[in-house]
Amino acid sequence: MTTVAFHMDAGRIVGFTVKGHSGYAEEGSDIVCAAVTSAVRLCECTVNDVLGLEASVRVKGDTISLKLPGALGQTNESTCQALLTALMVYFAELHEEYPENIIVVEED
Image (cartoon, rainbow, N blue to C red; front, top):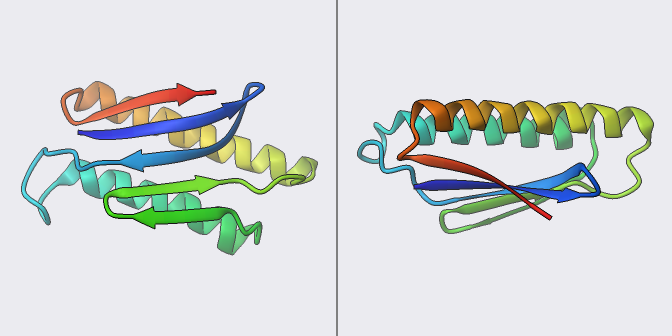
């Protein structure tokens, strides 16, 4: 199962960690893993490459995490919160469709 944990601080999403493989199908044919990987990569590219914010990204084994930098400024903060909230909604919808393969949690 894939676990997606959104890290919260005072109602603000400050990052996320994605861990594990969904187990929906064999590696290379797993549509749930492909959906998760694609969404995570899009988010990371938007934050780091498009917005130029240099979020911390760590990859180790079957785990990837992203942590937003501090002091983003009002425009970047708003953009990042919209992006990460959309990611959370997307993963929640994947959970509704594939409840045995992905779980989404919020952590303080």
